[in-house]
Length: 97
Image (cartoon, rainbow, N blue to C red; front, side):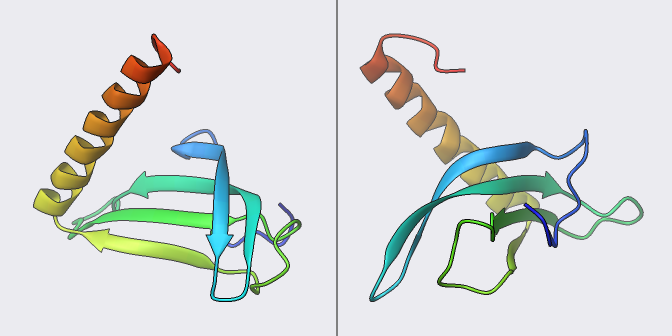
């Protein structure tokens, strides 16, 4: 991912995941970077950031999305992810890590 907007390093949560970008007239598969973080000093929210690989995605200009979550929202999202991860593991007969 050249021309990346997000900083990707050893601390990045997920540095390569499968992604889909969809619009009214298109749908395309891509790769993405996903990061969960807070500010180092005096954090006021949890940031969930993601960026599509702009080398393979042709419908959108280079961009990054960022959700600013309260601690309760972050915990709700984490609980939903856990629930759905368990369901996928059960369906596929084991740990998918």
